[in-house]
Image (cartoon, rainbow, N blue to C red; front, side):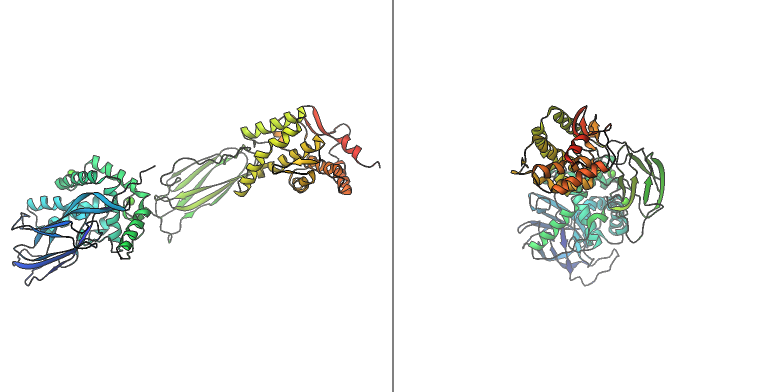
Length: 564
Ligand SMILES: [Ca+2]
Ligand SMILES: [Ca+2]
């Protein structure tokens, strides 16, 4: 299990209002100007009292003049720098404080420093966030290499966005991204920040940011080691996105602000192909399969299904943790045995010969990279009439029943079926198909009732108390309806013991009527159904037996019927 620990970054949104009188946007000339810089820490991580520094810079990004210091003055993270005169339009902003840890839903235990370098001529909202922080050193390096602030800032951003597959956001400067804005950019920033924070402690996070900043600063790229770490971070964050999103919404709500946050799935390069957000299937572009259902014969076969899809498809969902096999205690319920692979927009399926007695069905879901099920192929395979159906437990149970009948241990049978019957009742509710293999629940109920008949008692234990054996009437009627009309005869295998004939249920119910002096006519009727079936005669007289021990004999039935 991945740890639940998660940190969210401190993100500052700083609006900068300027009273500059003589700006030349985009140019290098700048008239010394008095500016009032007001800002806002959006996320409330920088609680009241956290420090904000603003250092004026020259074109070479060297500090000029003294540093201005301010503090966060409210829970919303607002701050103001009183009016000051700037010789150049550049400033480094740095904030030091506690931040909201979204994974834990509490404030961080340690502080964090974030920086950004800004062009104060930009009248738009200027935010300092993890994006601006990570590109900060790179911008400085490029400027010291001779680039203008604008060129350096543009290049550093393009390099950084490329590293995270965020190229489509190139046109908007990261300093305009705002986590609370409800936009695509906000979502991208949230996911980006989440990936960097991942499950780190504050100390680890600070160290990691320093490492990444230094790596990115030299050439606008991350080393293979850091790339791998970032990929691991990305993978770690994937299944936390919903909680991250909710934590953000809740956090802002507690601060009195309702924010919108987009579904975060589309804002990281989950499949590592260089583009974020191209992993999810677009439902408006239907996926066409050449076939959506296969009817496979007993002997199996190989099939090829072609598809076209807007995104690559996968046979297993993301974070797949192996087969979840349904284990059923008495029946072997194997899925259809099939191998499958996807190759060149084709699903190749090879189905093995059927092993099981019953018709089997399975579906092969197809997923996009994010694990959304986007299509499905249904497969059904005919059952093998003499195929397997008992599990090890099933074999043991029916071996035991046969042995107990042989030994005359009828009480033992009556009680040994209680647990498996409870199990079946449970499984019935879940609609697991095993009982339908051969209505093994009905089979067990017939054996239970027959065992009580064999004890000679009309007062029985039902598992919930004592009752008349008439209590078995309804379930025996159900068994007569459900079980096959064939000869069970002398059972030599657990399989034969399990495939009980409805005739045994008819006999058992008739005996119960007779023993309880009830429904005499119906008893006769049931017994006559057995004799009229022509399934038995004087030489084929075993209706039920176990390895030579006869339990129900045709002659027993004849003796119960009135002489014609
Ligand atoms: Ca590097
Ligand atoms: Ca991608």
